Length: 427
Image (cartoon, rainbow, N blue to C red):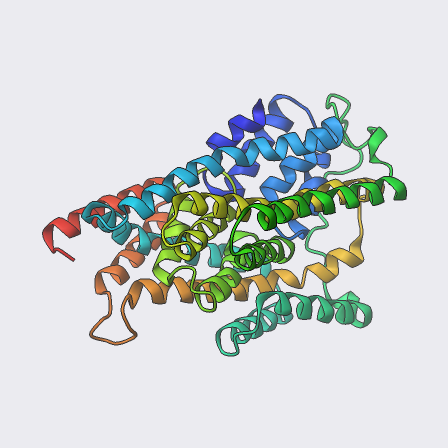
């Protein structure tokens, strides 16, 4: 039941989750070796979607075939589904009370600081050369100034990467070439670099059958929504939208949130900018993949569309969860045998390495989006500027970066700060 336990204790985002998995699976239980773990992690980090969930599915598949992968992935995300559902119901039921308003007033600047620190951390790792900086800046401009859809941006960057690698491949270093040396003895591990994985060989027949099965699995909820709900165009739009998010979410939650904001906030008006920041705050304080915040968007979308129905809001949350995370199961369970056949594919890695600096631009845009929602809650004007919010953003960055305060702890401190300000100032 390790995966269920991980689902309850996996705070701190993918870094914390992967650290827990490494400590348990590699160091304590010796289920898989260091090289096997890093090989799986490298593959998962190249894919769209939450890498911690995908690593969980991959490891489950490695140990116990397809059933193991499905069981591991489901147990990992189920706790956060029910926790976020409960918080979403509380949010729409009591969110306008003074105490919750004060709590979110304090938490929102901390969320801006968290996104900003994620931008710094990812940018420090991803921007290694001039071409990386150019891609990041152009990606930010495409989103911020021209409102280019996120999937279009990613596809354009991949196409550019293919052309660049084809003609200038020697100029782009492979950033994921590090791995344990082949001389290391890994015989003490259940799965290691020398293990023969019986189900790891690629079969075109099995691949085709599994692909058809996943297509059927994807279709079943859509058919059920058509047969048993009213206003099917809404449910169709929600299902296709979150499927698309799951398929193109390179860079995980922070990058996909910008795409969701573009569509769900600005075009469909399922929720407001501030509600989007509230959802990110809830996602940061609950265990499981941070992309679970998209389930909150699905909840509010259905809740508002159906005039405050908690039942249909719940259905929206479950549908958003299903369609967002199903692609991660598909990528791993269909692709894992192919990955096991070849430990390295430098061409693919080089092409996809161009996506990472684009993700930096996407997260920079998300930083601007969340900061503007917090600093200008009513309208962009000097008279409406949230000076207390700016001060707390600066304090939050200093606390978490310079003094190493735990993120969850600081969100709690920020919530208390909001309550204190509400009591003293009455904002």
